[in-house]
Amino acid sequence: MQSGAFSTVRGDRGVSVQTATDPNALLGLEGVDDPSETPAFVNNSTSSMDVTLASSDSSVEFDVGDTGSFADPVTFGIDAGDDREVVIKGNGDSVPVSVTAELPGSSDPKATISLTRDYAVPVRADQADQVQLKENGNTGATGNSGKYEFELENNGSIDVTIVGIGINKTSNTNAAKVSGENTLVVGGSPVLSNSIPIENSTPDQNTRLDPDVSLSTAGPAKTFTFDKFQTENGGKVGMKNESVTVTLFFNDETQRTISI
Image (tube, one colour):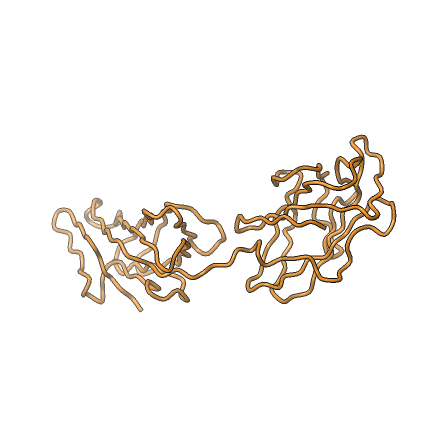
């Protein structure tokens, strides 16, 4: 359903701007009241539009094109006759959204459309809440080679993408880092070659995965294998019967700490 409900409209030098009751309103809005729809902004004019979204609610953020990257405010262009989808997230069932559309391609470069609407927002699950250790999965070390593994599964409602990992601590006080030919292997494929220092809780060049690791909802668990726990000087550290705490970082900017 499309709505051109403008709270205020300004058109300089006689520019014609349709009103809320006009079905051909210059700026069409879709998904305003339905949290199951991704909101869309439709340019019904004959000129390109530059649209800026902002909110007085500090919890509100916008993701243009559903890329997983949120910000507030955001500005994006819409060609004449085209539309753009924008995911809106925030606390509460509905959130205020201020929209300003400039028409740089019109005969009047100062023509603008301004409106404020309350948007219904879905309850969006955090990726970090979807993942857990597999019950009765392979966990820990079976020898003193320094290798250590654990299994993760996604029992949640949405797919997740892990982009980084940090090792907060281990019960073996001799361990200072994880290193080896392939520092981390997931599902049989290497995803990290750089060393991971212990007590590294922020993903940087040492903990960013390449490629990222995806876990599908209700999909198979994946085995994560560290190779190998070492001393500061590179000596092997046996990890049999030792505990490890890791922090996982997801592409929705959430994180989860898991004790193994």
